[in-house]
Image 1 (spheres, rainbow, N blue to C red):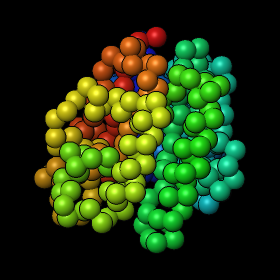
Image 2: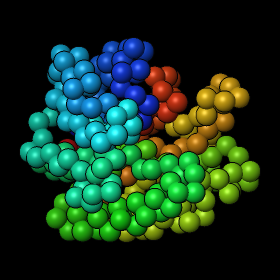
Image 3: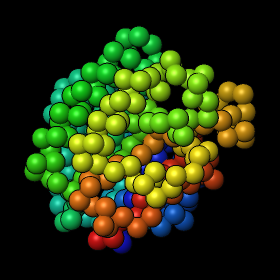
Image 4: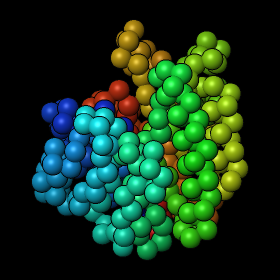
Length: 254
């Protein structure tokens, strides 16, 4: 059994000041996928995680204090792939993959469409990433693609779907992409096991949104359909408050 977490921590240095390491230790996770680490490898305190039994694999953005992903693993991977080989994606440190005996785990930080230029890049990223995964799964059929997708898939995944229908992160073309991605052979592990509303993984810092649970579910552990028999549980851990996101857990039977 492997416990896998995905967590956009909104800065590793800030999160460690809020005892992220103690929380990860108590979570009993075997593999932790982090996004938005906002640190170069030399700014990432690997020692604190080494003491907990994790090996740390880090893919930072070229731009300081921006983006970046990491995988912390108690299970020794057979191979680690830094990036996806697409320069404009790898420049921003958005993808890292660890290969294990029965599956591979990816930590991915999808762009946000914070302005028209970035929205255009986000849509380009979606197309490039889709094609990349279609090729990759020919070689590695059992994939767990964990991360901040920066997209709510359906109306149940967002607190006010009507008001947000023209907002980046809930645009029809973004939601259609998630539908297409799932149809290509993936399962939204949380939604497969939980059809209840009001389950979110990100809340704005504005308007007391987290206390009121006015959130968005934009963090996913997508698994290959071939891993569905191995899916044991998936839960959103909203009590963890190191970031404006919270972790999402998936448990896979080896």
